[in-house]
Image (cartoon, rainbow, N blue to C red; front, side, top):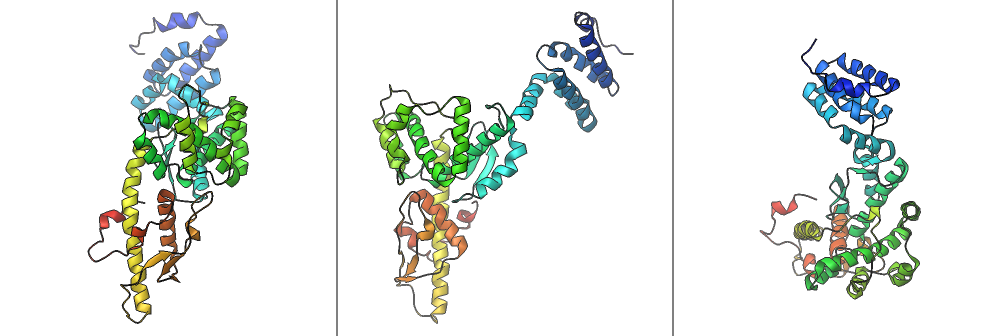
Length: 379
């Protein structure tokens, strides 16, 4: 017995077929076995839900509401029942999509296996990177199968990693934006041309994944037009840098259509990148100069206390090729090679990713009173 009003619900059930009536009443009875108020809310939504949800989905929805009641109480269970459309979307994501919470562990191991600066993974409103974190959408549902949606996630991780690894946000990028009278137009064109360069680099570095990316393009009907391939052939050549993408973006006439971005390419958010990079560059310069101070003190100790302050650190090799290679840099002191510990090499890798080399002012050991603990927190 209850005071719940059934006059509105009963006629709507009566218009349904016998099979549908039995289905609705059976599940309402199941939910009522644990709470009548929850069952009333369920049947109030379930009649209309039959027109837009499969019965198997309604069953999952009812079971989820009952389970929520057992774990979290009536209010939380009522929220589940009243958010039927949200449950349908989540159900679709689970069936054919890839959900970040389910695949983040695999994706994190994947990105940690790639070269360059260690990156974090978090969810965001879109796919992008600030050069320390890769932000991914909570779910990927643009493709017809869960496996293909997982590959879209993995391809997005690789593409955004490539932006941080291959100099997308190097000095030429910031100089070009600052000098442009129409930075948003330039940014849109740059994103299209830079995507060509990065995909070519991924094809050389991760050929298996690049084949998957090509498959995803085909499924989405976004294969590159032949005219676009001919126009951008130079960006696919080994040695093409971000300057080449910027040059083509500057020369691009705004009236010419650019190909639509593929789902795994994400977006560019330079304001967030600038903020993160500025803090990191300042922090890592202080860290590296402090490392040199420690190396200098060790060299002085090995030299039986001889004065070392007049000596200078230097680099024996320059950076070149497709990508900056900090491991090819040989740190020297007065022309003699100096062994560099691994933590210092990792720091050098990160600096070279941002600046293309180790600038001369980074090779000056920190002096007395220069140590600032605040610069040594974070990545």
